[in-house]
Length: 173
Image (tube, rainbow, N blue to C red):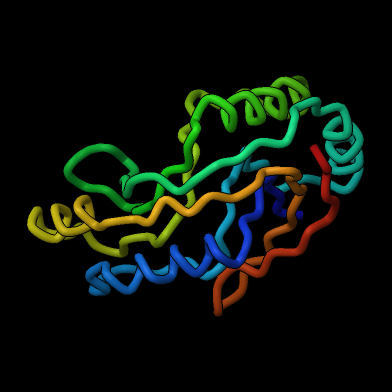
C-alpha cells in the first residue's frame, strides 16, 4: 500500500486553492485536485507495518489550532521548480504536529530532513521561463482560515487519471 499522513482542508480552502489555480499559467502544469497538507509520505508499506503505523499515530498529543493560507511557493527553491504550492501558517504549530508524527514513526521510517507546511497546487512537466515564475510568485492568495483538529493516514492508489486517495484512519487532535 502506498501511504501518507496528512491534514485535510475544508471546502472553503479547496475553493480558494482552485481559484488560485485558475490564475496560474496552465502550460506545462498538471493541477492538483485533492488538497491536503502532507505531514509525512511513507511510500509503499506492507499491511503489518501499516498496522504499527496506525497504532503509533494514536499517541499524537497536539491541541487543535487555527491555520490559514499563506503565500505561493515552489519546490525546489531554485530556477527549475517542479512544484507550485501555497504555504500554511502558522508554520510552528504545523511543524510541531509533523515532528510528533515523525518522532512516533522512528524505527519504522527515516526522519524527514526538512518540512515546509504547504498545499500543492500543481506539478510542472516542463521548466517555465522566468517571467512565468514571476507571475506564479506574485499570485495573490486570500488568507482563508481553517481549523486543524485532525489528521489522517491515507492510502494513495495511482491510476491513469491521477492518484485516488482513501482515508484509512482519522486521528482527532
